[in-house]
Image (cartoon, rainbow, N blue to C red):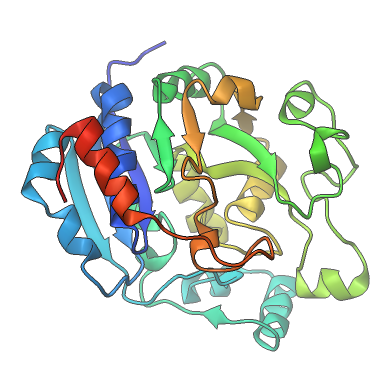
Length: 318
């Protein structure tokens, strides 16, 4: 495969700068030869987060990789409907009705710029064919980016490569007994409506809730930039939104399948993935720092622990 080019990286920031910096240093260590620019889009942290990304020692360690930082005009947060005026104007009437109904029960935001939607700034700005999208809590152990690049070039019309999975609401994927990434890659479909796997009663359908559970997870994936831009221009469909009763990119994933694009999970089991990267290496999800996801209280963000690891493993003092 042709690896004589580089990709750009997109990562969302909200507080937790130590974790993001640790992620990027581990990324450079194993994948740095394939990366040109990293786009850090901060979601209005309103603290000293941005200053940490400007740390001269950190920037020197990341060189020759370029770091670009932007702060959102309006926080994207974790709203379930992220749509711009441009996207709203392109939607069919049924989607407009769903959107208007959703305003009654959940927050709906309209943005002056679609750069405020997750990852869209990097999608808009990059001059690369592919964009590597990651979370701020990943420990990279081996060159997963090379694996992804080989996969995305292995067949025609591949829109996305990465960790295929579903939300905890998915009725087919619990404990991996009924469905799995490997089964999906082999052609298995858990229901006729796949990748829509959620509730179908009238109430939930009208509100667009709990329907889309399957996707390539956006915490570590490689997307085709031209395809992502095409979906915005032709449909107003953004990779980084929560539209249509799903998590980030669930609706986007459904659309690429309907449009006959391909997707690939080259590391379909945890045993394979853990040799290349570990998500939630701190022992909990990123969301658990801000919300009580598991009913056991919010998790502690151990910034001092991460600072010690940065010093011990990379010689960086923050």
